[in-house]
Length: 129
Image (tube, rainbow, N blue to C red; front, side, top):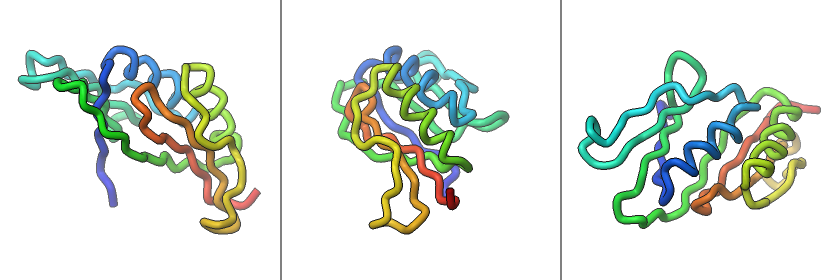
């Protein structure tokens, strides 16, 4: 079981704003922000469903942000569609529109976008239509 995951962002404010918009259809909100005065290096923003953040975005001190993949599990295909539409409107790059991915399994319905740093962000529903 994964408790939380974190990524780095070359432009912290831009990525924080992107995720605030892109994750809203999934029920995620910005729950916590820790400034660099407390972290001792760069600020971090925690997103999730209240009361606990489980997705963290941190500023990258060096600007080096190797891309990662993160998938958010949702309970409906409509949430996948809404995530994709909202993320694209927030400035994402398309990395695979909503649709069934039968090579994973018969009910795998997902959408993929690239965030401002090129991270591959996915929303996926495993439920039948």
